[in-house]
Amino acid sequence: MAVPAVELQNVTKCFAKVVANANVSLTVGEGEVVALLGENGAGKSTIMKILYGLYGLDEGKIFVRGEQVNIKTPADAMARGIAMIQQHFSLVPTHTATENIILGNVHGLLSIKEHEEKLRKIAQDYGFEVPVDKPVGQLAVGQQQKIEILKALYINTNILIMDEPTAVLTPQESDNLMQFIKSFTAKGNSVVFITHKMKEVMEVADRIVVMRNGVVVDTVRREDTNETELARLMIGQEIVPPVRKEEDTTQSPTVLEFRGVSLQEKGGSRLLDDITFSVHEGEVFGIAGVSGNGQDDICEVLMGQKDPNEGSVYLAGEDITHASIRHRSEAGIGYVPVDRYRDGMVMDMTLSENVFLKWCYDKEWLNRGFIRQKKLNAYTDALIEKHRVKATGWGDIAGGLSGGNQQKVVLGREVDVGSKLLVFNQPTRGLDMGAVDRIHHVIMGEKEKGKGVLLISTELSEIFEMCDRIAVMHNGRFMGIYKNGELTTERIGLLMAGVREEGGAAQ
Image (spheres, rainbow, N blue to C red):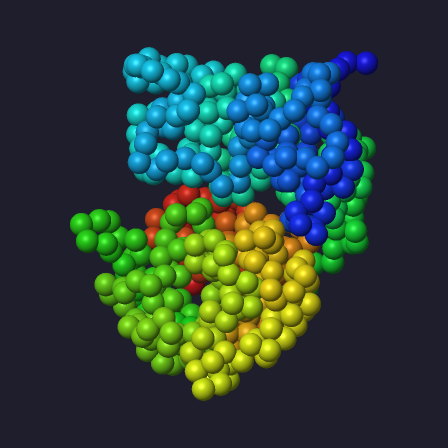
């Protein structure tokens, strides 16, 4: 039998009283793609961080090509041909792609031009187009990920760990990444692919290791399984998606209205161009488009982070165009931002402190200037239970939770804040099927209560499943507003690319 490229035997890792991995054993063969599948917090990233030397193991053994090794640091892992591309990139924005790649790998006097040529050749070999002489901060997310891959290829990696690599990519960029994985492993290299997306698993994986609650529950070959079976293994139960009722919500009272809103930065191009739409009570209004086409700007104008150059914003008939952020929250807008790390939570705070961030001016939670701590803690514990957050209680530090559970906390807080309107900007990006299903049920539940919902997503399946009407966005403009069912995937893809239909778009 061939010696595996990597073998982990009975690896256990604990953080204080929390068992992250318990007796985890898995192998990765030469030229094989192994998908690690599981919910957020299942232990997938932890076991791979142990292999890469970011965490030390408490028990167990690691073998690389049959030799037992002691990997204490990433330098130990890289010396054995192991590299890891993490979900959150480790790049210096002001440095060029070349400078980022050689950082820490080259010492003494060097020629940047020689390294640029070497990197161009590596990129060409794998069909990458990366401007190696441009600052990374000026590049799109997809190009930044290619730079992370080039960093691994530069040190002659033959075992590549990829943690949620498509979480921030467009569908086209994801397809390109799948092609890279196939060509990389065709040369005898190995890939461990941490994901929760069934489509990608079924496209590139040779074997699939399913984890739940820190343990391996099953290992299956791709040809012996299907998406339904994998979902059952991953979640532990069948997933029943929420049912959207077919109804005309445009006759209901208007909750949110944008009237001719345009936004332009000084000396720059227009970020938003004459945006006009309305969201009604009991309606889920979707905005579809590739990231970076103005969706975030709509949210920032709506929440008061940016003032529009033209146009007006109304909430239930009230002009809030120039209202404060605090006033908008108190008026009944709940907002789940695209970046929970930057805009949604303070990671060093407890869960109850994070929940209190949106209530800190509300007298209901204060007693003569002091926080009603018992009431706040009880409320936070009830939120944890209601939204099935994997946490021990209100005192847990937010940064200690998995991404999906952090998102559930933000969601729970904002659903209660948003008595009239809920704004979701990519609410399920990077989350597993269980967390996605939970968020979808919450959204449909709030719709049934008569709240208006603005849902921004790059996932077309999510847009089609959840929304009553759909606006397609490209380059700061709406290409049209459609009832759900009027657009096929092909037509919406063309609109997202900026290709207008003959005769204009429907309204």
